[in-house]
Length: 182
Image (cartoon, rainbow, N blue to C red; front, top):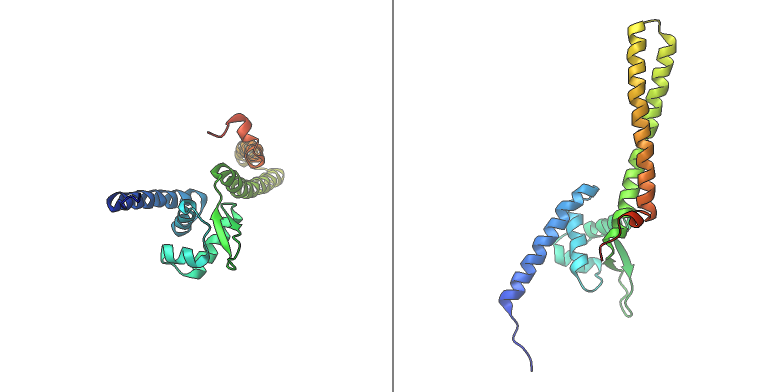
């Protein structure tokens, strides 16, 4: 016995999912991802089957080039993966369903790069101030440099701690401390 299609609730369902996709798109900004790429991820996440670039273009009314760029960005972040379906020649993509894996990959990559840069800048500042300290006879300046060196040493220790934290997140060891919700 066939049931009648419940158009009213199908429309409500679609609106609810669309609203959540907007939330995903907005939150992707935290990871340095544009809202349009966030929407692409949301569409892939809620689509039950892998999608081609043409499918994505039709779903989001964006250019195929934009879809390709978005997929590449999401793939680099381990949020989208290639899929295979027998008989389909076009490239297929699906979302990475494990958000924990995506987060740890993205967090590790982004924060590690920035933190390494911060450590390098801190070391350069420390070296420059130490050199100034040796080259000056101005006691007030020496005192100020010593005070600033203490602050920079604190910053260096913080960044070193942050690198340890990033390593724990990046390796997945974080889940030993904060297990994934099942």
